[in-house]
Image (cartoon, helix red, strand yellow):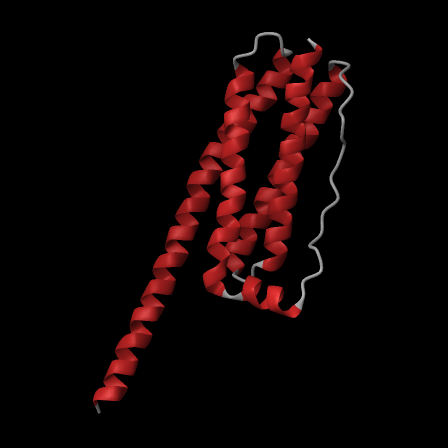
Length: 166
């Protein structure tokens, strides 16, 4: 049984880490729509991490961690410029979404484990379902922003062509 608890402890750590990634990414991104989405994702992951801690405590499992320290590292001027450029947000947000896929895989593995207490499995199932749907929403937002950026780029190219042909 101790081994199973290590697996759910790892899920707890991953959930807190995901919260931290979304929080720190939201601090760096300057696109309002995306910043709102990222902040919401951080808050939701915190909620699920706390639900896991509560379920652990109820089942007399000592959580290995109760919180994670958040806050962006200090950026130098070049790093800050790279983070703030609109074209650079995609890889940063994709890293968050990809990490969620790892959590989903971990959840899928754990829900098959019959030795995990039912109330913990219930939180894991809700977390997994939430992450699946939020991944879809996150990808949708990214695609919309990419389309906007492409449209703006095409408009600029047409304007430059028109100015050049005059």
